[in-house]
Length: 72
Length: 265
Image 1: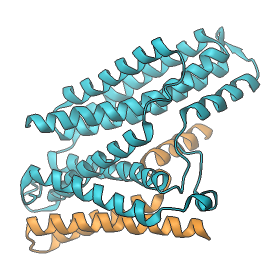
Image 2 (image 1 turned 90 degrees about the vertical axis):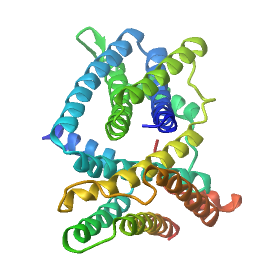
Image 3 (image 1 turned 90 degrees about the horizontal axis):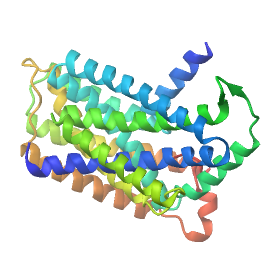
Image 4 (image 1 turned 180 degrees about the horizontal axis):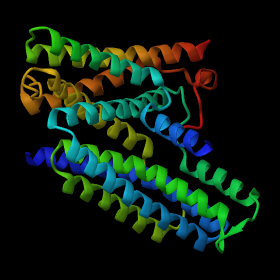
């Protein structure tokens, strides 16, 4: 049991890292992209650019939340 | 794959491998110099064998089981999350909200722990130095392997990615043999920032491209400008991080109050 816990903790730390909000934000943006690709007509050039901006915005928001919490 | 892409792939894996190997070397030196070189080197050897097994299994599984677009989505997504974690630390360090990574301080901490630990002999080895050096080399090594496999497979050029990492290993071992102290002069914070930018750039490019797996054709999505957009993404991530560093900068007299956690790598 201790080994499984340690193994899980290692991969969580490795893949998700110190701030889970970043991982959650990226997964959310990619999931939204997947829904758009699956269910609507889209222009690939526009969609890729918009998703890139969303990734940058999601990272910025996650970082700012992190910093504002540390101030309290 | 153009020569500039080959160079950026080689440089990215070299820089990433260099910083991780410097960190592993600090742990190995602290154990070897304080406790037992024999047990420490057994730990390093065991970690390298485990890493070789991990690399073979992970590389084979990813290259064999996933179609191209799915590979781009999964690996690009992981690379993006990984890269943004590095950028987060770089931004917090550069803005004064987090302590700079200090190899000399980490060496001193490891050395003190090694001196204070009990002597336990297993299989004829000093168990503490064996386990600590094994964990240090394996954990830092997994990060290198992850970057080499993800960059190599997605850029369809694993050999160049491997050459970058091996070159870093040669440089670190060569310097260690000459200096015989932790490599404090390596600008780790700057290198990590640079690698974070590259990981975020390629991660953004590949993960979004890979969303094409959900389209009717299953082919990768096409960016306007194709591979040239990588340069635009790199500049975009660079500018965003500079803006965030400037906006979040803490005045020097209040740095200790605004800092987040201090002991992350």
